[in-house]
Length: 337
Image (cartoon, rainbow, N blue to C red; front, side, top):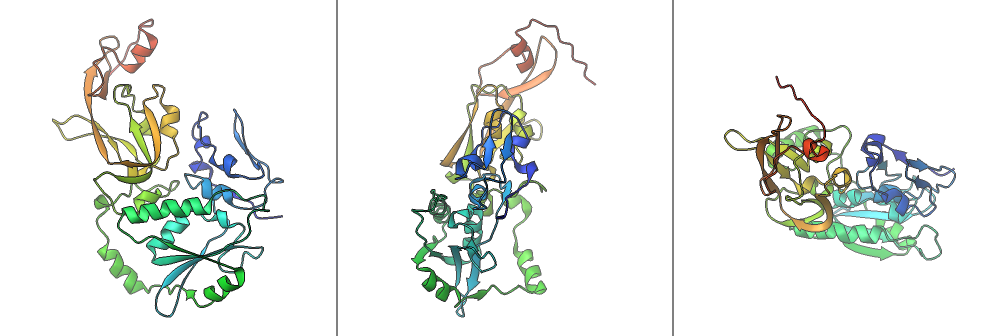
């Protein structure tokens, strides 16, 4: 039986909210092994061929890759990434399907110094698993690299025999010694100068967060867009966002609180948009955006007495989101400390 994909349930949006709209794994699977209905996400191991396409499509890295492309270095120190498909997973660079290579694997290889992707291009036409994947991800990662001022990966397609001969000219990357690791760590910028959110055991850094932080408009794989006039300020999106792309940022007095949008931290999981009852949030993919701070105006509800806030650009409303939803048909009593 082929290898089966491993799911990290804590990262899957369907394990977080029932109304999650993501169906990336189901759409990518050529054999319908992932089953998504109105009630749950299921998996049929008998239908799975172990191609690994679902892992490459998952926006939250909830499905673990079945194999890794091979990154090597030649005698002159030049680095290259090697990908081919074949039946032997122990051979360097062999994946169950070339389209199983994930965007994260491509970007990390480029950031590690790979200049070329050597691909043993198979004839995908008769293959039932042939769907756009690797080439789409390759183009998207190159857009990110060029946007950050880095050279794009070059693509070299060749026959399997030529590919193996080229791969054999390369050696595994040398392991850095402890002293060098410590030196490089000392050169790293402070945590507040990077895109890295609070540490999480469940969610890896989004792709754009692996690149230098920018306060200017730039290209992102995904970015939240907030309609300030529709937002009621319920804070549900900031409480749910697992990576901090949407966050409530209390400002030092006398400055008001604000919503902080950090596109570099967005995975495109769409949890925020799925949850928002006011449809004030949308997720735009491969779009230009910039970090944004949205000031909030604070009020006290005359109906229930609770304090609430909403975007300052939203027309003034008299009551809190709960009282507006109930249309004042019920009496609410709030006890504050």
